[in-house]
Image (cartoon, rainbow, N blue to C red):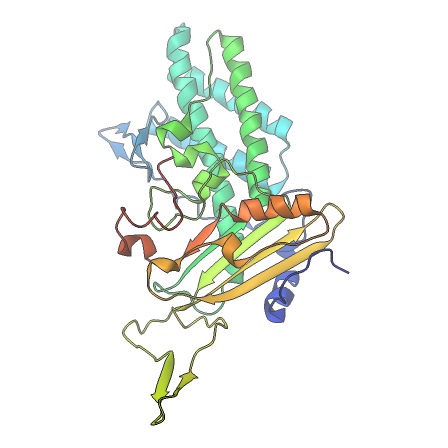
Length: 367
């Protein structure tokens, strides 16, 4: 008997999830084929008069990019991408990633710093290298997470629809990757005689550099407001999915219900729609959570719901899904993380003013 108790989940979703090879974990990181990953989706690099511009992030601020000519930068970025993909494939260990980092950094500094360059000039270049490598790791993690989540979308995706997927495996794997390159940066700095400190990316608003949570839901983009606390630590073996229905015929309206007033003053309501999810109906949404505990016991809870086109279309996930278990401490941890996740109808934040969009939850996204 499952230690979790919750409302019954749609069997077709549950069967669909369990039929996917992607949920069969090898070590910690799920494998995703390379052709599923779109590496340039988040950040682009542009040359102007032979020198690279500052990288303009979705955060509205900028961070320094790699030094050197285009050939050097392209070569370094290719190697960073290779290391990131090998790490998330599971073919590169944390120690190997650190070693690769130090080796690539050494080669990079030898190419962009003149012979006998001061420790300070090497530090500037090394800091830029660390920033770029860290962002590359998080970018690959997010892209793989998103590619994995696409399989759960029901029906045809179109501009009227929205969806989001979160797999905590990528959070934990990216934390290990960041720790490995940070150790490599500190070791290289000590060897070369300069200092190294991890920048305060959170204070700078550099969401694509901070951690998996901030890169996964970069709140500078108003369509990406899915987590309220970037520092929230997810449960292990945890997945969350949400999708909203929609169709190409944006102007087509259908009645939700019909109210008939009888001569005796009574009313009769005929409902044409239920809460059951319909991938072609923009008023319908569905969300689920899948979790496996330390003993291998699996829990799956789901909820179909409706949007009504008002400010109430902003939901905290814990309002819709709730874990109950004999292990109350573990249930509390799960529900606490669900309380940091939110979902909303497509275009919700664009439709409501900044003065009112956070009022319902009291959330301040200016982290």
